[in-house]
Amino acid sequence: MVNQKIICSILLALSTIAILACLVIDFEAWIVYAVAIFGIPLWVLSLGLLTMAKPRPEDAEERVKEPFTGY
Amino acid sequence: MNLMADILINVIIAFLAGSLLLGLHRKVMARVQKRPGPPIVQHLIHSLKFFFKETAIPKTVSKVFYIGIVFILALVWIVGVIAGPVAHDSLLILFGVYAVYKIVEHNSGSSSGSPYGKLSCVRAVLSAATELPLFAAIVFVYLITGTMNIGEIIAYQSAHGPLVFTIPLAALMFFMLIITKSPYSPFAITKDKALISGFETEHFGFLRGFMLFSESIAWYVMLWVFLTIFFGPLNAVGYLIGMIVISFVTGFINATTPILSPNHSVMTQITIGAICFFGTVLMIFTGVVA
Image 1 (cartoon, chains in turn yellow, green):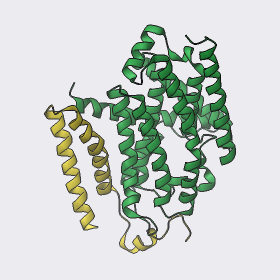
Image 2 (cartoon, chains in turn red, purple; image 1 turned 90 degrees about the vertical axis):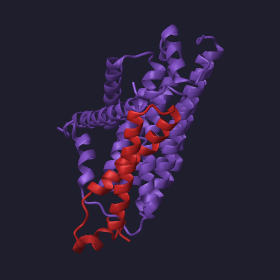
Image 3 (cartoon, rainbow over the protein chains, first blue to last red; image 1 turned 135 degrees about the vertical axis):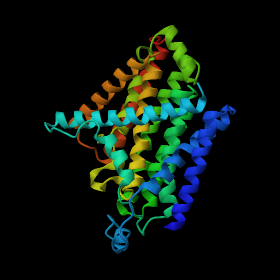
Image 4 (tube, rainbow over the protein chains, first blue to last red; image 1 turned 45 degrees about the vertical axis):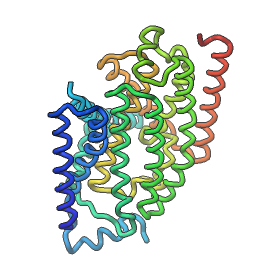
């Protein structure tokens, strides 16, 4: 979980920097498209993985145990 | 304007407008069924709320795939925003976006490890039938305008009038696709309630919010493409009215039509597609279409 937090923070910082750089500097169109196509979903994904609430430790096992599948 | 600013503004507009239109769609369905229904902003609030909801990754999933597929769903529709409203690029890119969307539906179901997701994944293969009318509609647009470029199609229509009057059956085929992708559609066999939420069943909490974000953008992009290639050059008010009308009409259709079984859904789509295809061919060969 700590690893996930570190990776998400790094990805969020990288995608934010890349998007801001494209806003400030006029790069070639293909660079801006590449940053937008990968950067925007990455920004939302990493932000979401950081903001989402985690289950309480005593509930964690129950939560990952097939919420709907009935296995 | 700076290109990245243009893209960001269009993505935000697509998300907000798409969410509100899907909220309107749900409201219309509720009113037709004599229910009060949720507020129009409910879809938008849900999308944002889920980002803070408790999320756990089930043991049965393929973790990288399970998260990656949600990322790819957002990625393909951002490509849709860029190829459509931002760059007015080729229709073939948008066809590619839609094809990848089918793959996402398929793999989202298979990554979950849930039997409901897997069944939905199988139905996603069947529902590829919707792509045939879409491809045929694009081919007819090309035959009439001589181009796949959206900017040039807009220019053609400003000179010759909206394509909906020239090839109405092709527009109907595209409209079939919009009905298919609208929530609670009679053709939505991948999200049949018998499968809980289909391929989205095991994606809950933040990941569901992320999917709702992408689906709002998808709805906006599909409506934008339909209005742009069949209703000629439109201004912002024209797009707004067009999108509201289409959301209203699809909401009405979906509220009054039960979901079809997979085989009936596929056969109905193929039959309507075939009638529209041969009808348009006939119109071209008999000289009805110049």
